[in-house]
Each structure stands twice: as structure tokens, then as C-alpha cells.
Image 1 (cartoon, rainbow, N blue to C red):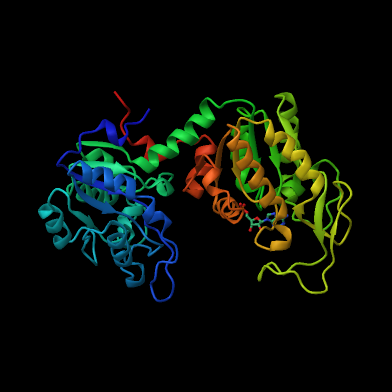
Image 2: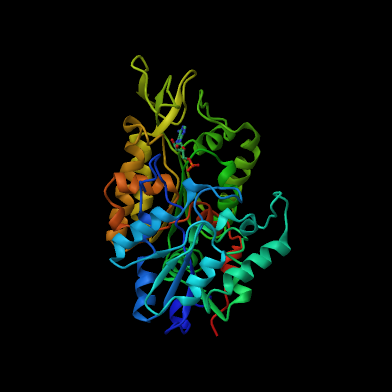
Length: 416
Ligand code: AMP
């Protein structure tokens, strides 16, 4: 178990907090979605209660080691000020400039300082100015960051799968470190779900590609009781079993692997569920996420898809079949949409399943939803508040589910 915020003494200390303020900005630099900023408020408020001086550090976008004015964290400072109703000190330009260091040195208990985008420095990502790998430079940068605070709090779940200066290296150079409240919640739900789930334990995987989720399926097959595979991924599995899939997205180089997974599931007595019917269409405008006026949309009678058509959502029989499994599950992990849910006509399967997962949660199951699209889907279905845990980091939560060691978590000290 890793140390969490409440395990370390932050009273009156200078606390460096790695947050994930990688927020979307429009052309006029307005923040179009502030959920990542809102998500850090509990940790900040706890630290304020403890009379700590708070130094927030984050990246935004991919400035590739150079100062890019459009990727400044300034708009975040403004939004954070509105959210907290407290002044936020912000030093633009360079997070380790003399001015930044001075501001950190002069910061008083109860005050908040936000430093500039870490990735304006190539060393943050372990590179030198020329873009070549340079671990020594990364350590040096991490030391400079660390020198501004007494203790370090990691609360940027979205970046803990990266071995960067502000995620893993920095921990070595501070007196103490811990997971913040947001990261603690992720570790609790993802960790406990995987380690000691209430059974039956169901995984629902959707999305575009089998290749993105190979590691996840491999790891989960050792832990779960049932798996539902839908979305475009399902067609590679159906094709591997000799089912006709028309023009649906099939990864031909993953057919053997798909068969192998089905075989493994059988050996391990894992119930392996694939769609038994589909919503199909003969043409879709994927770029604009539209169905052309003259397109033919139909429902299949079974799992087979006729030539010239592609599967874009699960059909009603699949929903019925999956519903039974969802209702009888005590732990449900869901990642990836079950169809092209961005198009309303093809979102019914995903939305209905989101509702079923929420109903199961109301009846006592633990539900964990991860991945940007699945999160949008539970929101679109209006059930996001009824899900036990919505995981914030896309890549990080997938790597966690793969059973990989995440550098930003591994670096944190263990509880005594
Ligand atoms: P991922 O990023 O792997 O979770 O994939 C999400 C994408 O998969 C979404 O943009 C969906 O539109 C897409 N998707 C889901 N089902 C299908 C399908 N049957 N055919 C094509 N794309 C799909």
C-alpha cells in the first residue's frame, strides 16, 4: 500500500502537488472543460485546512520542450481562482526561473502558487534541448522542482503511467511523498477491484481496436468471471469463429489471438459473451459522424452480418443477453463504447448498457467506468452520478488494468 495524503505531515509545510491540468482550450484560450481542475479541489482544500503552502505543478498539451504561449497554464490559474475564491499566484514563462523559485520561497501557509507548464522544459519528459534522451538532465530538473517544496503529493492519475521528472524522479529529492485524494480514490477502486473483487466480476470491453486492449484482456482473464466484448472489437472475435462480418472493422492480424483468448476463457471457465445480433448500415460518414440520407440501416436476426454491411451497434437480443449478466454481477468494470455511439442512431446499445450498469450499482454492485468515450456515454445516459467510480486517466487506467507497474505510483513510498 502506498502512502496517502493523510499518512504524511503537511501541517504548515510547503507542499508540491503534481496535478493534471491538461485541460482543453479553444482558439481564444478559454477552457472548454474544467473537470480536471475541479477534480483537484478536494486535495487543495485538505491542504488549506492543514495550513500548508501549496505549489501546484502540471503540464498542458504537447509543447515539445519549448515555450508555447498558447499552452501556458495562465487560464488555469484564472479558473482555479474562480473555483476556490482565493488568489492564485502564477508565474508565467518558466517553472524553474529565479522568479518562480523566489515565489515558492516566499509562499506563506494558506497561499497557492501555480507554476508554468512543466513540458516547456524538455527535461520533464527525460530529454535534452535537442530532443534526445537525457536522464541526467531529467534528474537535475526534478531536483530543481523538488527544491521548491518540502513534501510531494502526486494527484495526476492521468500521467502516472509516464516516467517523467514530475511523476517519478521528483520523489527521490523530497523529504516525504504521498498519493493525493484523487489518486487515492483511483488506487482504491481500480486496485481493490482487481485484487479482491466481489464476485461475480464482469468486464465489459468495447471500442475500436482489439490491439489497444490485448494487455487488458490478457490480465483480466485471470481475474474475472465473465467478459462482454462489443463495439468494433467484437467483429475480430466473431470473424475468428468463422462468423461473417461484412464490411465491419476486423483486424485480420489479430484473428489467431482472438481465438486464443476465447479458448483461454473457456479453460478458465470465464463466460465469454459476444453480440448475438447487430445494428448494421451499408455506409457511414465516419469523418463527420453522420449517416448519409440514402444509407440503409437494418437489424440482423443473428450474429452474422451480410456482405456490404457493417456492424455499428449491438442489437436488442444482445442487449437482453448482456442485461442478464450485468444484473447478476457484483463487480463491473467497463471500458469502451459498444457501438459508434457518437451517432445517435447507433448509441442505443451503449446508452442502454450504461443504464443497466447504473441499475446494478443501485442494487449493490461496484461499478468502475474508464476511458473517455465510456465516460461520455454514462454522462449522455444521465447515470454518471450512479456509477461507483469514474476513472479519470485514459491511458493510465488501461495500463493499470493491464497489471503494469505505473512509474508515478511505484515511485511513491509504501505505508509503514
Ligand atoms: P476506443 O478509443 O478504442 O475506446 O474506441 C472508441 C471508438 O470506437 C469510438 O469512436 C466509437 O465510435 C468506435 N466504435 C465503437 N464501435 C464501433 C463499430 N462497431 N464500428 C466502428 N467504430 C466503432
